Length: 382
Ligand SMILES: *Cc1c(COP(=O)(O)O)cnc(C)c1O
Image (tube, rainbow, N blue to C red; front, side):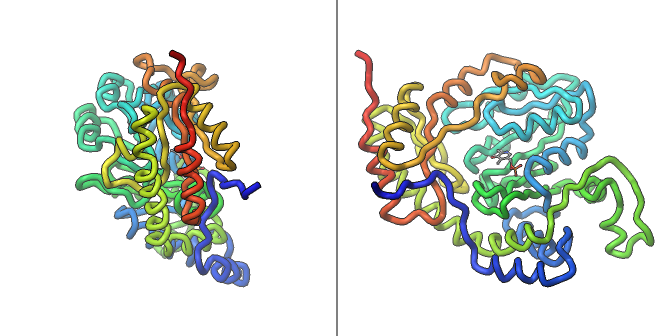
């Protein structure tokens, strides 16, 4: 049997091992050393963020965000049901209530109209997620959050370096979060970042990240000792993670070029099949500005999803779906609420098939995936 094509494989960037050896040979492998500084500079360049802090994960950056925008028990935070658990648990960690809204359609992005309707006097923030690195309607969303006087936080785990109109993803809200988990475009095993777009939040962000202390100011010589100042946790990553991340960010353009190549090959190779079987491809719904984080087909029904995944597995290709809607999951029902019935989210989640998309896929592997998909015909009950 031919080798299985895995769903995701982390990119290997030149210089990773040299960087790691430099950290191990130094006396500094805890956080905020030279590689953290260098990776942060690269991240600011790629994202366009005024300020950024590396964190241990995107989940932790979301936790920091909820502290920074002062979410308190009894408050509400509006977010899509179709997203990873991280945003919801960050809300629940503050004793607040996640209020779930639907997606607008096959882009998988939240419905801005429902966000507007879900906002109440208790709403403190909105957490938006740019699905696949294709932007939510930021102009409309910013108008809604500004009108209501609530903070916008962008979970930009999929969209590093992405743009939309005049916006750079992760920098439109007061805070943006990135993930460097090894399934993301750029990785360091586990890691993340907080993009701090509102300068008024900067000093407190540094304190929250460093166990509630002003150690960052101390290290810069701005105070002569560091003390406990505020809430917080240990949200800074080790230099070992930063060393790998620095090498990965240095290769960002190459990673993106390689991923976009796969994405474009799927879009071209699957268009006719999608028309024949009545599937919608991600390339039918997003414009040119996206981060090539994922490629998917939305099949007409749940059987189509299960059928295509099983068919691909037979052909040695791993495909996947994701995001069991948060509002219908056990903890979502316990901790959250919905303003509406989220029918589009339920349908999308039950019909979605994501294809392998990683920087190292060869031409032959891309071809095998396309052949696998186009060889599938959903069974239609007459
Ligand atoms: C991966 C992911 C996260 C979590 O990232 P971690 O760095 O693993 O905490 C959060 N949100 C979204 C949308 C993600 O895809």
